Image 1 (cartoon, rainbow, N blue to C red):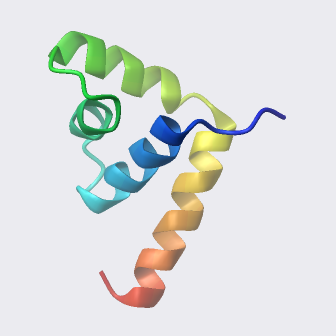
Image 2 (cartoon, helix red, strand yellow):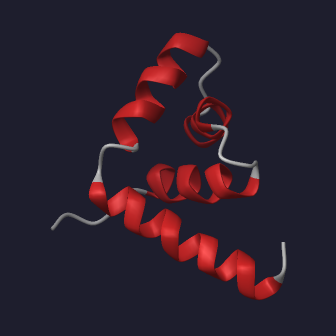
Length: 67
């Protein structure tokens, strides 16, 4: 399985931190301004099982820390 790119990891962290707003997380991680590009990119990422696994892991950390 291929390693996640830094932008993908940042997307996951932003996605959890901002309350699961996928377009906003994509815009911040990939430095994109276009809403349609961000929306499509976020949707594509959320279809990847590696991304979903990392999101679950990050969520667990947030619960432990108490965010």
